[in-house]
Length: 178
Image 1: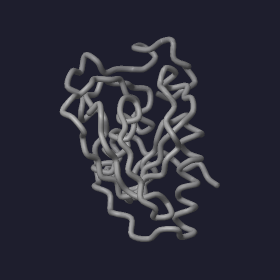
Image 2: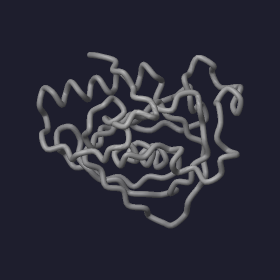
Image 3: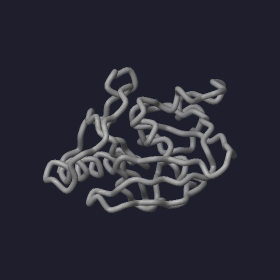
Image 4: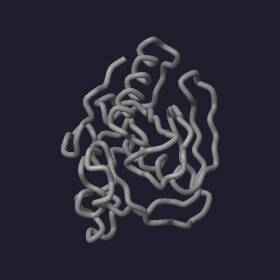
C-alpha cells in the first residue's frame, strides 16, 4: 500500500464538506482504506480523515494501542467509520489539547463533548453504533470535524492555549510532527 501526502492547513480542500460514500467493498475503497492506515501509522496519528489526503468522502479511520503523540491516552480500537453521525449524550463539554496531522507542530485546547454516540457503517457496510467517552469521544469528534471542513483551531476558544508543541509540551518526542 501507499503512504499518501497529508494536506496542510491552508489547503482549500480541507475546508470542503465531504460527500457521502455511496460505493462500498470495491477495490478502490479497500485500497483507499489501506493507504489511510499506512499514512496514519507512518505519521504516528490517532486518526485520519479522507479529506486530509485530498479525498472528499465521509470516511474516517482512527484507533491505536499506544500513541507517542498522546502518551497518556487510553487505547482506542482501530475503526473504519463511513458516513458518520454523532449524537452528544450529554451537554457536558471538556477542554483538552489536540494536535492534527494537517496542522503539524502545533497544539491547542479544544472544547469537546465528553460523551457521545457515533453511528455509521464500516468498509463492508456493516452498521457501527458505539457510545463512547473521554479521549475516544474526542478523537471521533476531531476526525468527523474534517468531514465538515473544520480544523481544530476553528474550535479554540482561548488562544493563550494554542502554540507550538515543542514549546508547550517539551517532554513529547521531538521526532513527532505534532
